[in-house]
Image (cartoon, rainbow, N blue to C red; front, top):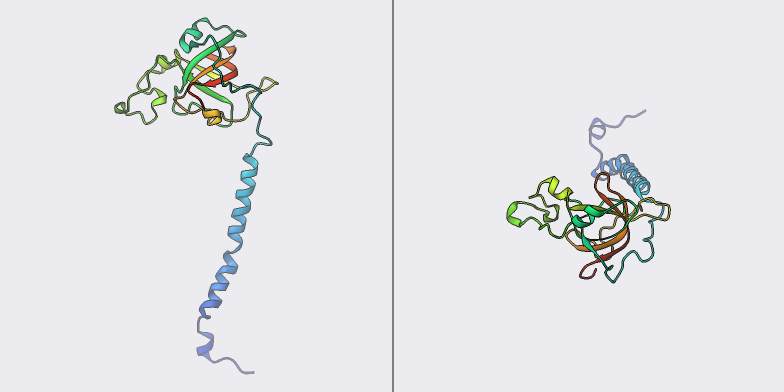
Length: 190
């Protein structure tokens, strides 16, 4: 039996063979990562996006609106209310994945740029007590009374700092005014 000469067995394989060997070893990793990413995306996606209740986004402003602070003073659970305010009061006034946002009384002025607030709609130049006394939480609920699992941000022009008129029923006044909206009108279009 003849053995290969030492100079042939000590040599490294040609570059193409080495590249193919590396590819064979590492090829499954991107496939596994892709499969995991797809599974994770599917797990986060809701089964079906909730539809907005009919007539929720009114083109005409509901009559009889009052500023948030005045409505807070007279609000009672179960009562009809029509609020006028500006979306804000915190850096992220819209809840992620839920039809909830916060509005503040239009008498409050957003913080000027020289105050150092990167998001003027959060009113960071005011105390939390000032903001709480002039704010309300707006929710959109389904027929079952549960808050819809869908963000309102971007719907019909709803964005931070936009002025809105909201008609609905007072759900709670315990820890602040909470309103279940039946109509949301974006002032100035949307």
